[in-house]
Image (cartoon, rainbow, N blue to C red; front, side, top):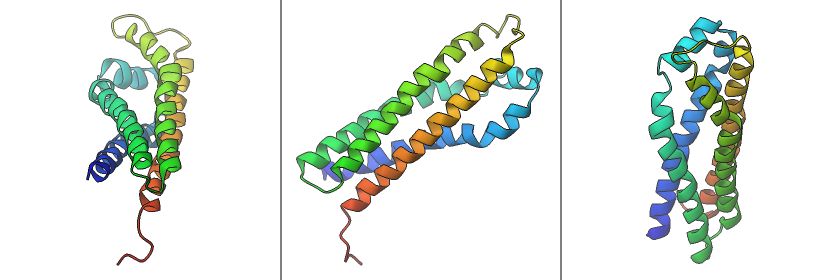
Length: 160
């Protein structure tokens, strides 16, 4: 029961985390075409992503913890799919590290723009922010696929 509950929580949290990243990915083509006023206005000053930074961050960290626990319990209960569960945990952990390396430094800079001037090289920050999120989404998508593989590895082949 502990393993099933952990699986359920891990899948739900991973789906939510991937959903947040996938939103960024789907917006990428349009947002790269926006001018300074629209991009800065929505991203920095409009608060469009305020909940991503608060609620989303908690979900992201909880996902990594849940996936690590899933890998641990899968191994402890000697169930198939341990390597895939571990890979999912590592991939989502990598995505979190990538957020700190690629996106967070840009967020620190963007915070200065709320009441201050926007620098002339704002387009470079936009590119790093947008593409950073796209890379994270790709890593999470692979991680989610490995998570599904871990769950399916423990599904009986002949079940109806």
